Length: 190
Image (cartoon, rainbow, N blue to C red; front, side, top):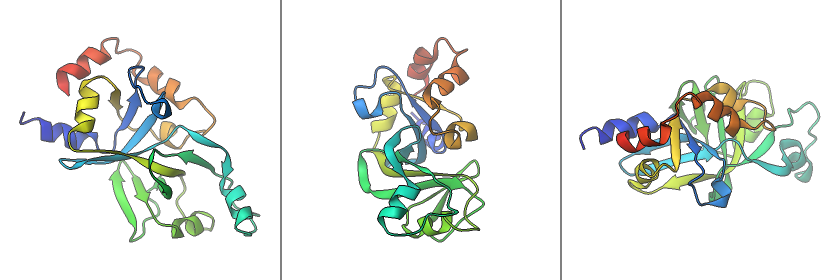
């Protein structure tokens, strides 16, 4: 089991693609960008599930802030945990003391002030706003990968920050489509 620590380190910064064997309806056809993964567990945000009829401009209007000139970003369902928090996955061209550099030029910021930053000049070029996150306990994610609930794939900016209305999950499947034995490969390596 000496390679287990290497597997853990390699999953942070990866995209987890849900498989048909996942039984949670909220995570059906989900893609999770894994922000952290170590011996204590894992944390990530769902990157392909928009919250219907919710975007930055609608929120600003409710807060009585004029959204003129502000990019109208969709809000995503990030996961079932910490649903009251906004997790912003973004390019590393913006970093604050509240930002965590995840890897592959991607950072995560969990702070309400980032909303001000992304709505003004000087914020990150690429960004994805998520309400909530996914959290796994110690060895839970490893067990789910070994049970073929998730397929870890390399990150891809188009999959992460691309068109929110596109079917990112199907695009990710095409990315790994040539691997016909992907489930048996995972069971042998997880």
